[in-house]
Amino acid sequence: MDSADLLVRTLGECRISSPLGGLVTRRGTTEHYVDETDRVLLDDTLALLAGRTGEPPSFEPGGPRRQIFFDPSKIRVGIVTCGGLCPGLNDVIRGLVLELNSHYGVRRIVGFRNGYRGLVARHGHDVVELTPFVVDHINEHGGTILGTSRGNQDPAEIVDCLDQLGVNILFVIGGDGSMRGAQRIAEEVSLRDRRIAVVGVPKTIDNDIPFIGHSFGFQTAFGKATESIRAAHTEATAQPGGIGLVQLMGRHSGFIACYAALANNDADYVLIPEVPADVEAFLPHLRRRVRERGHALVVVAEGAGQDYLAADGTDASGNKRLGDFGVYLRRRILDDFAAAGEEANLKYIDPSYVIRSVPANPYDSVYCLRLAQAAVHAAMAGRTEMVVGTWRNRFVHVPIPLAVATRNQVDPNGDLWMSVLEATGQPAEFTELPHRAAA
Image 1 (tube, rainbow, N blue to C red):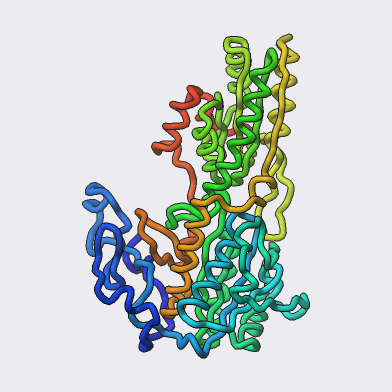
Image 2 (spheres, rainbow, N blue to C red; image 1 turned 30 degrees about the horizontal axis):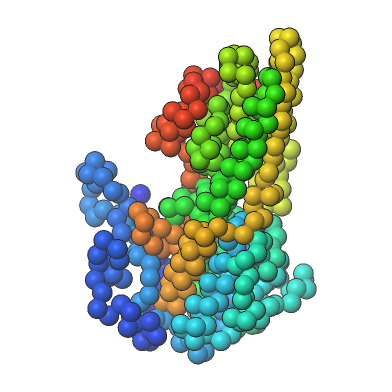
C-alpha cells in the first residue's frame, strides 16, 4: 500500500467560507487534534516506518474545514440505511440531521426508506422529510426509523432518483456490501459528471471493516453479549456436568466472541472463524475440563467451524449462507458425552437478534454522533466515495475502495487472541489443526 491508495476523491475546489470555520482558524495539529493541512500516518511503529520507501502512507484527517464546496442554503441531502440492524443506526441518522441543520443551515434533508430500494422508483417507497423534530429522541430506540433491506440495486436507477430529487449529498449508513453499492453509485455519478457527494458511515456489528478503528455499535453488541455468557455460566455451574454453549454474531470475524468472553472472563473455550477448530480434538478436552471442574463454558462465533457444515447458497446481499455451527456443536457435545457414559447438562443460547436490535450504549452514542459530524464535514467539503472512521484515535477519511478491499479479522498471532488464550486457558493446539472436510 502506498500514499496514492489513501487519497480521497473531491468534487472540486472549496471556495465557500464554512459556518464552522471559526472553530478551526486558530488551531494547529496537537496530540488531540489534526489540522486539515496535516495527515495521519498509517504506520505507528519505527519498524513499520523503516520498512517503507518514499513518502509514508497517510490518511486525510476528519473534522470541519475553513472552506467548503457546497452552499448550505442551496443543497438537498439524502440519508439511507442498508443491511442488517446494528445498535446506533438511529444515533447516526439523528447526528447527521442535527449537524446539517443546526450548524450548516441545511434545511432540505430526506431519508430513503428500506435501504437502496427506497432510491429505485419501481419499489414505490416515499421519501421521509427529516427535521430536528422528526429525529428527536430516536436515539433512544434500536433499529432504524428509515427501515433497511439487503440486496443490490441498479446504480443507474439510484442516480436517476438523486437527479430527479436534486440531491447533492448522499449519506450511506451500512456495511461492506452497502459500501460497495455506494462505490458503484459514486462511479455512476462520475460517469454522468454530476456534482453529487457520496459519503459512507460504515456499519458492521462484526467490526470487520478495515482502516476505521472500530465500527459503531460494536461496543454495545459485545456488552449485550456478556449478559448471555453470564447466564450460560450461571446455568453451567448450577448442575453436575453443566455446559454453557453461547453462539454470538461473527460471520468472518470473531471480535464479538473475543471481547465478550474477555469482559466476563468466565469462558473456558472461544472458537472463532479465524482460528480453525478441530472438533475431534476439542471434544475430549471439553470432557476432561468438565470432569475436573464440574462445568465448562464455550463461546463460539457463528462463522466458526464452517468446514464441518454443508454450504446453503447465498443471501440477498450475495453473502454465503452459513451453517449453524452452534447447533452442530451442541449435538456433537451431547453425543460425545453420551458415548463416553458421562453426564452432560448443556444449555445452548443464541442471542444474535437481541444483540443487534438494542439501542446504543452511551459510548457508542457518543461515537455515532462524532462519526456523523465527521461525515457531514467531509461531504460539505466536497469529499466523495469515502467513509469516515478513526485511525490511531484520530478521525480520518478512508477511500471506499480501500475500505472494501479486505476484511478486518482477529489476528491469530496478535495480542487480542493471545489475551483470549490467557483468559480461557484453552490450548492453542486443537485450534490450530487443519480444517476437516465438510460433513
